[in-house]
Length: 132
Image (cartoon, rainbow, N blue to C red; front, side, top):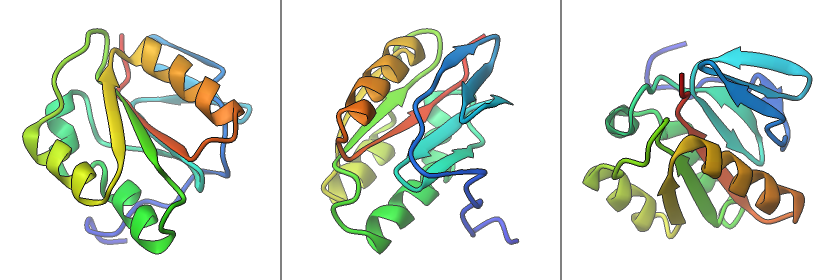
């Protein structure tokens, strides 16, 4: 698989995040160390350790899913790590260009918000940067 291709989901389907901490997340009966992207199509790893990394292609699978299935995602929650940090301008522009509404916050509150919206059946995705 080339670098330009999105990684396949390793937990297909929509899943709540059941635990997080020490740089890892738990979902779908498994644990993953590192940052994740959760969409209606699945949960997959992303290469991101800071909000700045999101501008380097970490959100490519999200943008591809939106293009393939218009309306499948309406809101994106970005967990920026242990503390809230601004989303890079290029990321904000890419999300806005696809018509997505988004909010950034520290990862803990972001995954709680994602879980509530996901449980309500909303068309939500989350890019969650692992926090130590």
